[in-house]
Image 1 (tube, rainbow, N blue to C red):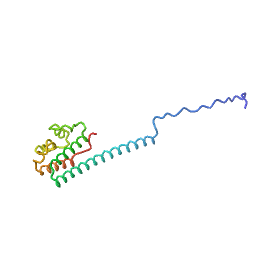
Image 2 (tube, helix red, strand yellow):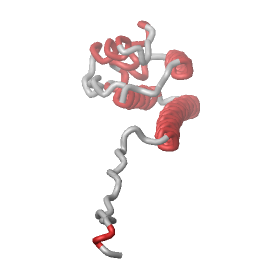
Image 3 (tube, rainbow, N blue to C red):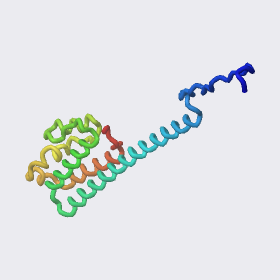
Image 4 (cartoon, one colour):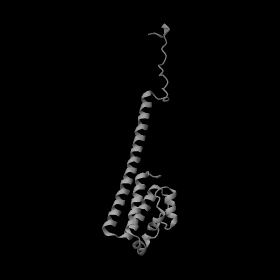
Length: 163
């Protein structure tokens, strides 16, 4: 070919790059699927955690009750109940400071709606864990009543926690 023929070839230019936004329909589908799987995974984890916590509490409560019925040691029962409720408080509401003793701890339990201990049984959590004579002065029936109250409240409440 001659340049004299009037056919001048120009350089080949590539088209401009395709912009990445908006993504194609397939990408939207993958994003939605990812979010759905992520949400389902988080909900499953929270459900299992709540169920595991409830099963652990019920198991511990049953062990404390069985130990009380077998040995009749009310002091050990009071200590175990106090320890269990402190663990529950730390798990569900870390803002509570269960290491403190006295009425403020029970008020915190009631305020956060974890466990509502009847007033006539409060001494079991307030004084009995720290004094063997006070623990032994109460009848085992009161301890069993407190255990059954805690058991009912654990079954009826959501133990998933704020954490």
